[in-house]
Length: 214
Image (tube, rainbow, N blue to C red; front, side):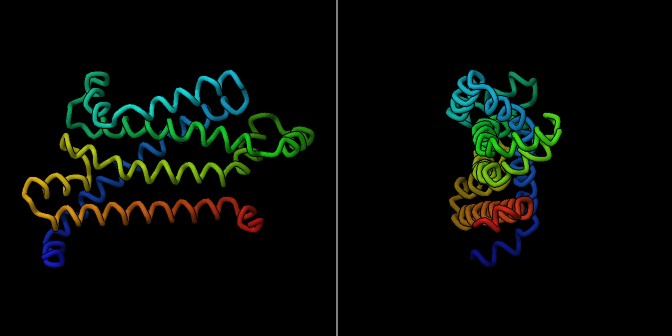
């Protein structure tokens, strides 16, 4: 029945997969843009780190379903608006990435930073040309965790009617149809594996020196 149901519902599965990818990836991109300056500040200032890193950890402890339900009243959006899912996931992703960015920048050897400064690099150019590229291996590791976590958490949104592949879980459960549930689980796991491998490959391309060192 599994192999018969999938071809007949390929359009539905692909549509949910597309929605799942958008709901998972957009928050990662937004969170990365926000986490880089916050992580940089935490890596440069001990007082800022003492506030930002614990605060990020606290954000991640907020129950996902509760946050998704509360956000419409804060954002002024409709309950079924996908933006609620993306904002919630962006919050969780920032919470994960702030520490990763801070740790990755702190891992850059001070002697390299000093050498770049001695060569005349201004702070902005030094950050983007020297510090951030050298931080890529550690940063990508955190990004992989955040992305896979997002792909998993998107499914929670299905409980309020917006959740990509999570729709297969809820619909299959309501209809007592295990085939649909299994399809949703397998597709979600495969998507997470593909995303993880893609980020791993991207990290190796962006930091070939790290691969050579290994």
